[in-house]
Amino acid sequence: MLKDLLATRANPDVPSALSGLFTQDADPSAISFAAGSPNESLFPVAAVQRAFNTAIAKQGAHLFQYQNPQGNPALRAKLAARIGKWGQVTTTAEHVVLTVGGQQAIELVAKALLNPGDEVAVEVPTYVGALAALDLYQPTYYGVGLQSDGIDLDALETTLKRHPGIKLLYTVPDFHNPTGITMSVAKREQLVALANRYDFIILEDSPYRDLGYEQTPLPAIKSFDTEGRVVFISSLSKILMPALRTGWLVADDTLLAAIMKVRLASDLEATGVTHAAIDAYLTANDLDAHVDVLKDHYRVQCAAMVAALGKYFPDEATFTTPAGGFFDWVTLPKDIDTGALLREQISPTAHVSYVPGTNFYPNRDVHNSLRLCFSGLTPTVIDAGIHRLGDQVKAAVHEAKPVV
Image 1: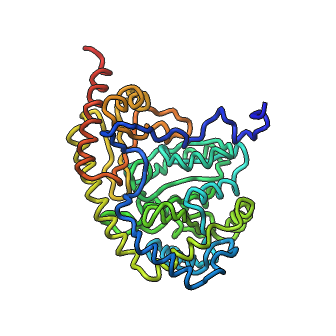
Image 2: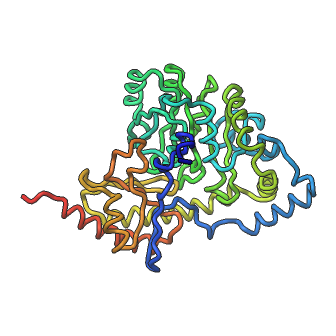
Image 3: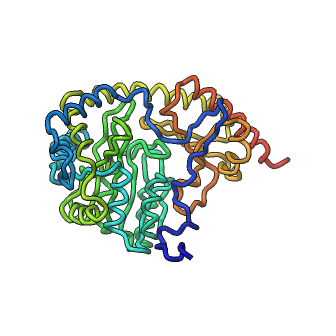
């Protein structure tokens, strides 16, 4: 059979962690808290259109020629300066690589580092897209729990002592996807010290770090890196437009060379036309002012989500209070399966959707949590959707309670 000729990583009997993640509901009253999409009403469409025109007018036919494999040098210089300013990372354009979104950056790091069976530590829960990328290289996962200020470093060190072969740790330190939690500065510095001591690489994935509602961005984990063992990833998808498909990473010499080697086997460059347009946009516009507009908007939406959860969800539910980003994380009693509840009850009757929490665990072995995204909805719609969802959750919790 043809499928027997496929590589193990492409086995059709083992679905991607991303497949079937977002349910489709044709009901006109349906409300989705599932996809982590920015609010498209805030996209600077006219300014980006002008930027494309500027880039084409400036470079003409040459713009459509093959470009630098690492990406547009001027844009890389701007991004290096930006992470220096708000991430306290000293770097240069030579150590920045432009990628097709942050997702490609994660996959490139996995491809450069992992052999089948290699040991990888991840926060649990963790970003499902990272699991989809890492899964292709068949690692052995070790999950490490989260605390209110980020990864549990004591649990991580215990895991490292038991499994000294751990090669890579993946973390989302800023307004974590899916929980909304932010890692403290002290833990960032201590995490690098652990990486130096136990000889592993940190993959720091930070697409939301600009979107703190009150605080300025914290120093990146990369800012504490003294041995070149932290790869920093970010993206313009959340603060500009996802369809520009522009992510970027920062890596020091040894890791950068490995990443570029595997990258050149996948594509000779990300799109130079788009990169030139983004560079023109950043030259002509104040990105920080645009980000301030986003933060003001998302702050209101997040407050509406937290207020609605407090109003409509049962006392047995716990939820996070994010200080930035797009997501809230809800935990229900252990005997509630949020995947089954969504399929069998909530989606067909309440017409509300979310992402069941089991998708964010490498072994898919935790079933009583869910991720809610508020970024694309108005406060009124958020309140209505959480009201409908809360009624269903209350009924499920009541039904699951033992009869006394």
